[in-house]
Image 1 (cartoon, rainbow, N blue to C red):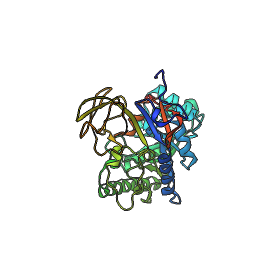
Image 2: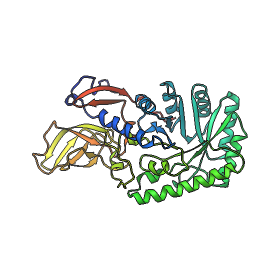
Image 3: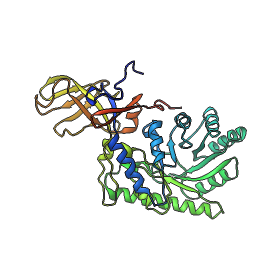
Image 4: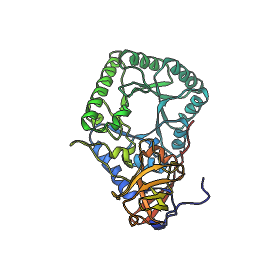
Length: 371
């Protein structure tokens, strides 16, 4: 953790030290309201994906606007949100290892906790810990509906796993996890529509197979920022897991949207300073790989179409400029990160601005929670 703060409440935006992760509260709040409005009256609830931001204050604001709870990817991440008062947390991942399972069971004594399973051997390990600790845990069957990552095949294999969960209290069979992650970044609306139609059909067939055995499927959960309108309108999903919608990174902005899609504003930025001006066409800023994730490509310079972020090394970002007059030493720029989730994980704090002032500084308390 840095010995100095990038900013404090009341500072002008111009005084924010760099590099700093900055949240435009007005755009952020509009994004939260826009998602709430998009789901209102649909019968589909939001479980906001907190792996995107790792910040309890953001999670509390999402819950206040109607989110049923949050998703996390790691048990240690879930623990941070439970300790912060979030009462319903789904770990949208498989959990392997006795120590992790015991911690998961301990969390289930404090909040409603869910977890995914896609393997009978892993399920039995979860059952053993849940029984030993007397922990009621929601178990979801993860179904591979097209992402090609974790998940059991749709249909009979998923039905068999659901029946095994139901036969092993104190586990509770909570439903199906049907997330198609790669669909979020398919660039055209036609590609996303087709991918989620296929995912919904796989989820529907699996749900019907489970119901044929007299079991209720309480929840079919999935969807993300890039596709949630399709899950919302599918008639099969009743929960969506969007996270990036609140911030909008450069990669999501590269999607092309159709008439029925809901769009969101850029609210998350990396503020950076020009620290070198070696040539008329090259500037160097103090935000490199350790300030902005580039796994989804380079950041974009906000509201400066004349500038292009070319490449990054650990502590340097190289900006292409049209002339020596375009940027001066000490100028500040706002970058739109290529991928917001891993960018959040690079920072201890989020500097929240409203207009030209710093309104708050929120801790990113779940940063580094990898266990």
